[in-house]
Length: 78
Image 1 (tube, rainbow, N blue to C red):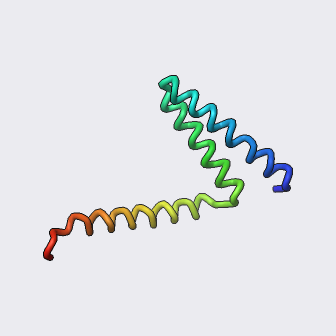
Image 2 (cartoon, one colour; image 1 turned 135 degrees about the vertical axis):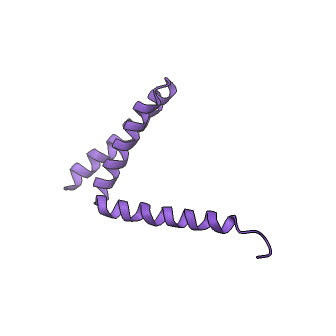
């Protein structure tokens, strides 16, 4: 992707954020969620992050969260 394309795509993100806020403000949370997904996909493309990399990252974060929750549930003194 050339620099001009990258700049154009980056300039779309604030517009999408505005539109998302308008949708959520109007009570259209599902439509807002769809715009959030669009923004995420755009950012993934801009940063050349594959679906596999995102999936691996999500799995690691989930494991870290699950690990921290289970350690929080351990009774004191054990």
